[in-house]
Structure formats: C-alpha cells, structure tokens
Image (cartoon, rainbow, N blue to C red; front, side, top):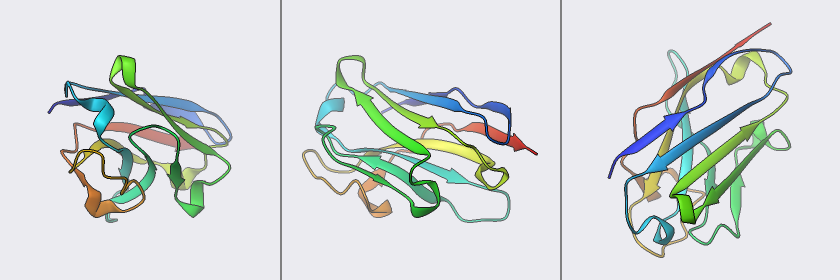
Length: 125
C-alpha cells in the first residue's frame, strides 16, 4: 500500500494546518488509520488514530482539544486537523494503515503498518 501525506508547512504558533493522506489500498475502509509524528532526536509517537468505520478516535493527551482526525472512505483519505499549534508540535508527520482488516486497534502503535512518506510541520514562535 502507498500512503501519500501532504499539507505540512511552516506555521506560527497558534495557527492551524490540515494534513491529508491518501491511501492506494482498495480496501481502505476496512482498516484503522493513524497519524504518527517524529521530532528530531525523539521516538516516533502515535498522535491520533481512527477506527475503520470512523466512529471512534484517539488523540494523544498532548494534542487533545487541538487535533482532530477524520476519514473519508469514499476518497481513501484520512485527515488530521491541527489547531492552536505549539512549537513542540514541530515534527515530521506520517500516516499509517492498520495491520489487520476490521481490527479496531486505532489507539495502539503496534496496530499499524506501512508508514508512508511524511510531511514536515514546523511551528515557529
């Protein structure tokens, strides 16, 4: 599966960005999707995940109330709406697809596979 993330860029603190990720997987709607990020010198972390139906979501504590994950199964696309961005949100953001069909492990990093090419988000003060 190919995952193409886009939407990153340079934004001032307090600003917003919307990331998109289109998957080539024809059975996209059967898998959980997630967004990870990796800042320089830090491990990759799961930022947000969404169930295969889109009915349930997970957001890491540091981004709750600021980030929203959503999906459009008709477009094979997952989104990450980021608001009130902080400098500590600076990272390369990757989208990922679940390992198993119809498995709702959207809140655990090990449930994902196939991280696509990331998109850089830089938040300036």
